[in-house]
Image: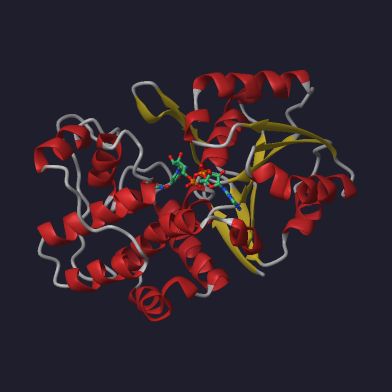
Length: 325
Ligand code: NAD
Ligand code: GLY
């Protein structure tokens, strides 16, 4: 097991390794004070891992309730959010109790925002079960729900108290969803780490999961510690995302986030004449990710201009100089 510690407005550990789920209860117990746990999960993940998580928490002496919502981005909305808050209240969770988010980025974002809001803030633990959640959304405290006007438009910065990533849970991921997470992993290599990038080139989809997730989490830890509230260095994590969000929105979200980001990375690399563009395009293809779109520049621009990361009239684009920079 690897441990990465984040020291931001809250200090917490991220545990990464195989076979960790049965240890969840004891790890949560170390956080102190809590009596009741609400496991928040969804209809695909809970049947797979809900029993192991619940048993581990009960064996550690917690009283456990669970809130299970329909899987998918469509559930990351205001009504499910309110349903969850009402469930927490009805279940009698107090300020010292804890929410455990068991699932991918949708679950983590929804449960995290509920934790930030319920009783003006209770603690929560992230148990990521997608590669994207393991390397990105479970770390750094961004929580949100979608509004009819757009994705992630209501939310809060709220750091988790613990992240427990059991890499075995990734074994049940459909290949396509695993590949989506790979776009974010490749992104970390381009932004910060030529050694990570070369490892991915060499191993392809058979990369060392524990080592690669740990490296990505270390890189994200460094960014979050430098710029927790996303006013400077953290914006680099948006490499490929502004154009990616344009392509994703233009497709009415039928194109996945990972594939859209891959297209965004490819477009900005080509447009800024990054000398490493051939390696960037080649690795995206190697991982089965797209590098082109049929959408016109004008169409993408009109969607990209509605990106929430715009400030005033400015849209900031992150451009690669070379791999690692
Ligand atoms: P997701 O949570 O919807 O999971 C993707 C799919 O995989 C779902 O169908 C889910 O049911 C299934 N799944 C999850 N774990 C599984 C497992 N172990 N085995 C089998 N199936 C499994 O989406 P995601 O791709 O994990 O995350 C995308 C979300 O994350 C978006 O809402 C995005 O806005 C958000 N996000 C947040 C941040 C952040 O910093 N907070 C960063 C990036 C993305
Ligand atoms: N996923 C981008 C960030 O956490 O800032």
